[in-house]
Length: 133
Image (cartoon, rainbow, N blue to C red; front, top):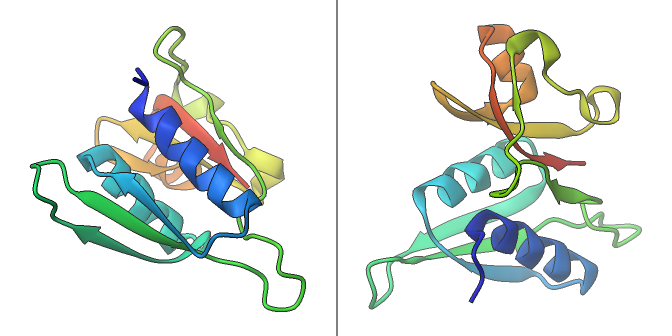
């Protein structure tokens, strides 16, 4: 049994991208749904679908995105930053820039989950969940 569901979510996406899978299924939660929406909006995944299952938890089906010519995945690296054993909080002035702005950092703020760029514009800090590039 895993103890960090967000790390499990990121690992499933990372492993599926490395194995060139088209679709990956992940157990749902509200935070994972919001992270999936951010990844879709920023162009890292091609599509997603939230499904209800027989248990209350539900399922997220994520269609991964690949370059049509080189067949390389759109997600090169996806890394957990704030872990249950060591949380990483930053204020608005110290928000990280991933690959000098080419990647995104997903930040959990008092106004919900958002990217580092959106948090910088709204001038809010929070917990840095992960880096995606």
